[in-house]
Image (cartoon, rainbow, N blue to C red; front, top):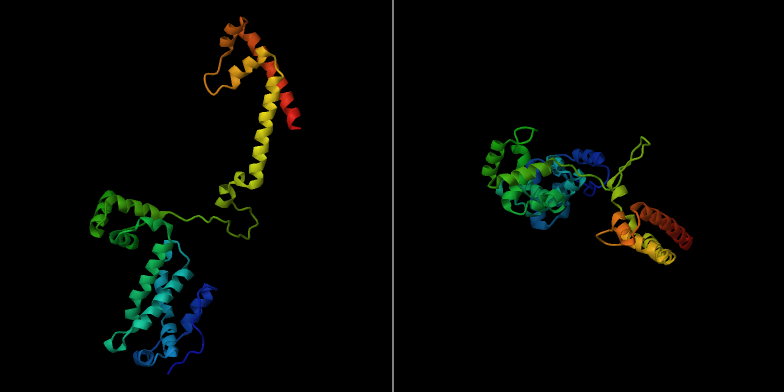
Length: 285
């Protein structure tokens, strides 16, 4: 009888090392499998259950490879598949004359499907049974790598019981790629840009918020002081030209109001702006 003293390996470490490890476990014969399954069911022999599990870990790896195109870590898929394998071993009845591998495939795939539906952002639309069927079958139903044509979309939609626009949307989502938020490490020494570099809102930092508030307060106080330093006519021109929320006065409007030329209004405005800048700079210093 084959005996395993090692614990069930984990796929969280080196994936290549894990795969080589599970390949090293011998495949059970049908009689060995039946004997172990009976020991587990009748005597609750956990050692027998462990032997059944480790001898089928390579099956989980093989199934996980079929889901590599969904953008999720293969190690995570394997771990979820292993949970399905354990559930299968717990429910396996050796008296039915079926090999464990045939029985376990359903449980392994079910756990992987559930993991993908929980974690993959693009399947949020897959809320119905038909949409889930579309999600897991669209890749294999596409005749090639090119975008689906109108007739192909209609055919797939009819076969899977979904709307044609759902097929188109799912194809677009399946063709998309996830972008890492954090920069991935590289050995070429070149600077790497990632979304985290330009999505961070530095203005929301407490120090920056306080800085903005102080700056706005100083500018407001400086503006009041600057306006107070002007004569009545200059202040009227600045307010009419720049401080109204709407309907700003033109040079000609103010020229008509004060009975001077538009050029004279421009000169007064320019001199007033220069004086105001000096007052505001002094207040901020």
